[in-house]
Amino acid sequence: SSGRVRTLADGLFMPNGLTPSHGDDAGNALIIASGVRLLRLNLNDATVEVFSELPGTADNVHARASPYGGRGGGGGVAVATSGGGGGNDSNVGLVYCGGLGSKYALPFSLLHTAAGRPWLRELLALVLPYPWLVNAIPKHGMVVCVDGQTGAVVQLLQDAQGASPWLSEAVEWGDHLY
Image 1 (tube, rainbow, N blue to C red):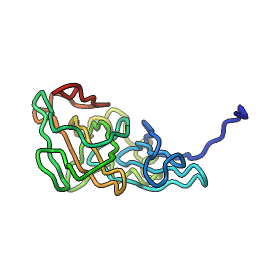
Image 2: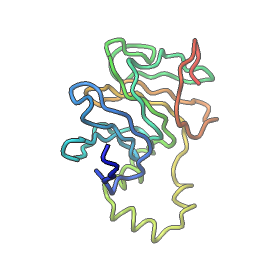
Image 3: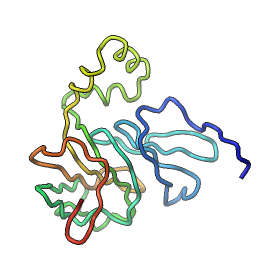
Image 4: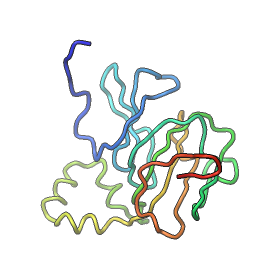
């Protein structure tokens, strides 16, 4: 209403998508997709905390009343990592979901290691050509849902054939996930 703009957080690693937080801090926080994490930004004091560690690089985030129905379509595989079966944990309420592009290459992930270390990201950008960095990231399209209270991964839908190297969003429509 004042027409003024101010920065609440800077130095975030690859921020790409945000949604209002729900639950206890509804209206007072944002959930931000940032690299391999979801962050919670408190709008009252501008503090940022890690809300969830993700199994890949996030692209977008949105709130849903529950995980997807487990209908991956097109070769998708639903894997529930917290209770439930068939990729939909019926005991989970509100979730934050988003598309993922790359996955961790265990036992080491350059993305995960660099996410919390700005000095390492700057060093890599100075030393290595950008195309090398991009090509070093394993491409694997996935959709993830995390518990809206704890940040734990409750659903991971994957393209088992690797035909979709990067997913930005998923929409459930009828019996299909697009």
